[in-house]
Image (tube, rainbow, N blue to C red; front, side, top):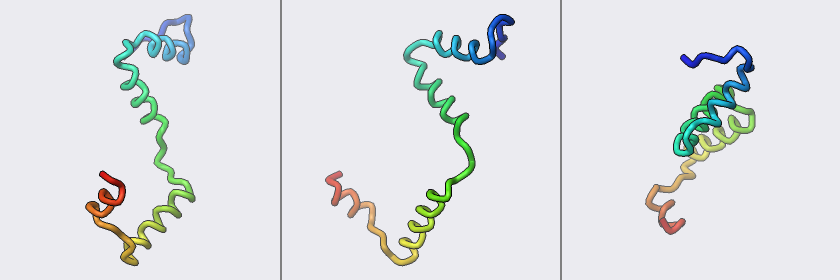
Length: 74
């Protein structure tokens, strides 16, 4: 566990730790902070998009991965 300096706020301490990380570790720091920011809630818009996708699957409106790659030149 990291000890917080008494004269610094928690936010200042976090900023200092981020500022002192080596450049090659900053992507890891960013990924970790992004994970902390994720929520388990799904917006109504996202739920609607998922519903549309599932309806497309049920209705047979799908393509194979091979066809998808071919149409996109992959």
